[in-house]
Length: 116
Image 1 (tube, rainbow, N blue to C red):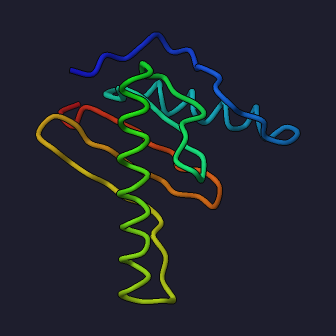
Image 2: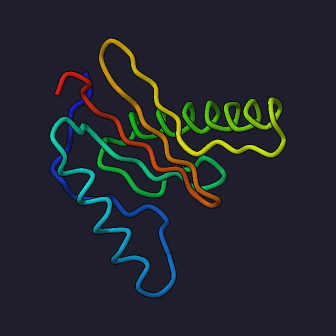
């Protein structure tokens, strides 16, 4: 199964402007500290993971697949109503709950244990 790594972030390609970085760090730390959270991934607009608390292969797999799924969900919401937009995506499986918060530039992916 998924193993959480010690709560330290890997820096892959991250360069926000000004004090935004500290704010982002704080938010990510707060999310990661929640009971049941297994991992967090930040993905850029191209689907490339730029921030993660999971191991590399898990990160790459989740980032790629969830980026595709989110893009599909976004266009589905738009096809149903062109005035509408996807704001949150939640997937619950037997083992995990995956939450995706899409933004203009990034996707925030949180994987958690649904039982906790």
